[in-house]
Image (cartoon, rainbow, N blue to C red; front, side, top):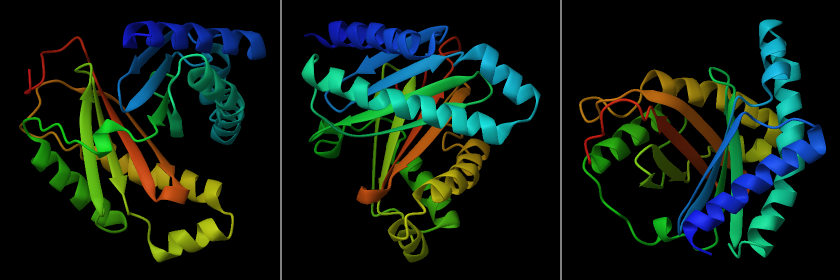
Length: 235
């Protein structure tokens, strides 16, 4: 399959799985795929339910509901992408944006090109330095940082080797989900409040998504840009 055909097939499958299992689908699903990863973005994620929970400030119920639903769908979605689309997946993560009720699922392929071959872009070193500094403010300098663009709207940043000894101990003691919730609250706020684009981008960030693959001491950070505004510096 071509990347376009694969993306289309995954989009239809995602919509079908939501409808089949929960009787409702996101208002819009978009899929991007390359030789490094697959990214699925579901907009207006379960709008009636989520909007009601946010209105009632039921953040605990909101978090649990989304974790259960996406966690339930991902194994079947991964099997489909691997078996039917022929893409060998290695690891995945996901996150939400309450501002526009969207969900982003990130799936890294086995032996992804982005970890073997760097594709430089204007401002990359500055962005990496800024990400390293923000990470150090909260825990430690990353051992490695990788980044690449997808379809001129998404900047994918992968950090390896950021966990502290205390965090590793919490993971060993099976407190992964508690750690994930806490890190998402603290780190996500940091990356939202101080994005690494000062002076090198001329459009706004639409959303920030972050997750961790704890067994590999790896995190995935995704910046989504507003496509309606002027092009980025690298165009």
